[in-house]
Image (cartoon, rainbow, N blue to C red):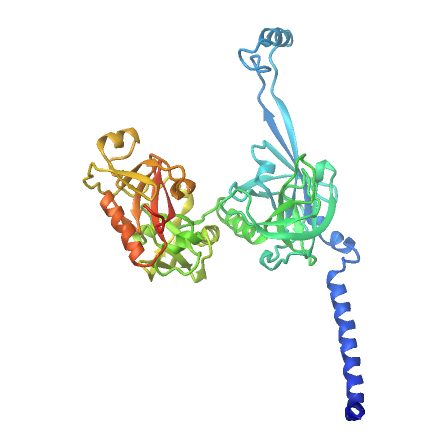
Length: 489
């Protein structure tokens, strides 16, 4: 009876339940259809290829390779040296010869500006550009940027050229379809397709921001465009990861947002003019963050040195953590370097730094990086050193003596504590400290005596922190590292 009553009570809701189930089923079918549409490959790349092909070019370069007057075939001192000298003498000196190389590029303006890789045209005596329609034009180099491996060329066409535009590479999503075009292995105008495999890849350069793709990229594709499905260039095909030189589905294209800034400067000045802050920096690791007052997580860029330059003039100091630059929060050093480099020379920017547990705002007028590569770190006055040594945290340290200064080739301005020995079982050894290193600061304060270092350790313990931040110099190069103060002495 109880069950029957329950059943009857539900009967008036049956029509609503049926409608709800029908709506749910329809929504499920629609979601599946939308998902299938999002995942499906384009029906064809043919229309896109037709649209952009006239703007893609093959590039052939010629270089004069000097001849040889001497043996040059085998290393000097080789047992085969006499044999090959006799063989070569019969033929006489080897005359200079011409060497050719192939690459790709793309037109970005109707009056003939062309983008390619710097390594495609580097050292070339002659650059010949072949267009999709079959005609050829000689090109001149407008400017190059080895840091991003980008070069800008110029041809003089009789009629306006078809060109392509840059897209916003920051909006490219992992998994989106892309199409690469170029001149792989000298095969001429060739198209390959794939997806964006990853973004923000760094290879080896300071300003690297590569899009990784599985679209087939081979030798000769260098300098060619990587297109999104709207026909916009979102990258310049530059490198591949391969054990044998062939494509294995791991290719890299320099992001268009980096390339655009470089190209604009090459067009305007014939060279790059990057902003320069004038600091040496390193990433903030979790253990370093633990040793910095007021830093609750590993973020920002830690300033290790401030030579003469814009940052020093603005009051920035070694040990500052740069948290915000020109309104952008800084996550790591790589991001900061890119943002600074893309900033206009002479611009005054607001920089927020963390110092002694508090944030400070500085106004820095940026210099130009290209003219400041040889900046010399600022000298500091030397303090009187004491002769005693002390064992702390697995380290044996000593003030700078004239003997140590000579042995380690320290400058007259160098100050701090010399590490004379490191326990190979200690955390200090594991983190890279070695005999001969110079500890310039502990807890972001200068130390010149073992007693001062010991005092910094005790202050860190009393403050309830687990790590002490050290500024260490090796061969003049500074870096920060954090050592645990919880370990037993």
